[in-house]
Length: 223
Ligand code: NI
Ligand code: MN
Image (cartoon, rainbow, N blue to C red):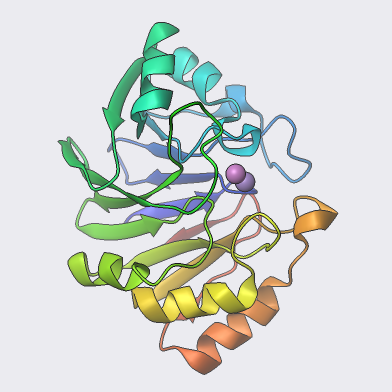
């Protein structure tokens, strides 16, 4: 049974006993809510949704220290390769098989933070489970397609508003995606993205058939 750990902001660690570990959007050193430091992390892969500082964060440093493989869009992957790091470039709509399963890159409506790039989300098939990590994005109705093309077990969605979807749009995203379990992120790191995850949970459970799991930074959920 895979385990997902929330490391604050948009950072998650996905693990299965004895298997490859995947890290998403590491932003730890400057995150006031981060439960650990980048040098404490062990990972085999690092997925990066876009190059804003709160997502690219310490990805290159952690990749170097762990000899991990970065999985991201072409512009970020090529930049990583220029720094001597292992990186696998993908782009929107593309899917590739890895030892743990596969990764498919989805749309995300957001800035890329790097010239010529696109922000993205990921659908990850990881040891029989399908996980959607939305990255930073506004709501878009093609989220219906994401859930239709790959029946999801878990969806990870931003709820903090201002830079991404807020709570009400994220609730609609949950109804589009039809994942049985949903975990909110990208909230309360700073006052500008203050949001009440309990309000999100209430609305998700009133308006959809999904279950909302709120994970405090540093805690895990098995699914
Ligand atoms: Ni961003
Ligand atoms: Mn962000």
